[in-house]
Length: 277
Image 1 (cartoon, helix red, strand yellow):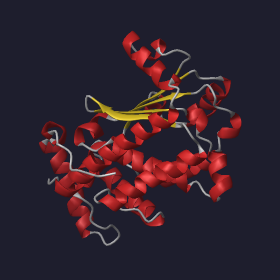
Image 2 (tube, one colour):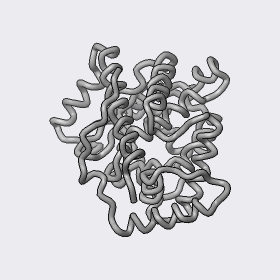
Image 3 (tube, helix red, strand yellow):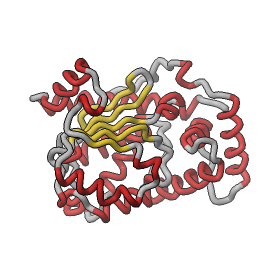
């Protein structure tokens, strides 16, 4: 697979004066710190926009993300071998939990991830590797791919998943804790909505169990229902989504999905290298 620099949509990388001031303030603080290595200008902007201008939160995220990267020997998405490693991580997880990832793209600049949550089984990953690294690495690379521009960061990712096949044995609390403390707290990935359709009894029960412990702004992000239309989709969108979830050739779908992730990672790489505050 060849990687070519994408045609950049200039408007998607426009930064406001306020956002630039946030990022420059954090960059100055990082350059004075001995605990944090310098990151790209795009990285500074990404962290600050995702943190809503909370500079202390942005600094905490940057420090935590660097610790996460060192633990898993990761680097910023800025070269071809980094992208190849991301695609290998996708393949590794797909070999354990096939047909989990169905669609990744930017729709009018807004990131979308469509998946089948019932296929993602942390217990299977643990049995093979005695760690959850396969899932954590995929979360990292998908997070980078889904927010390759400043406009995508502002919009936040919408996640749509099928909850029909979720079961209690797939709800691994050790994995959820590790995901939250090692990754979610530090990665500047803004989530706009998590939409769960076909939510079965296990999905609803799990959500009702954890919901009281979550901040109100997090609770507002998650919506569960049995039907697409109840989640706000139009009839034409429902037809497309039904085709996506019912498609007979999963291998062809996986190849298309991986190709799009590669293209988005190239876009991220381009912006990491050339964007300047």
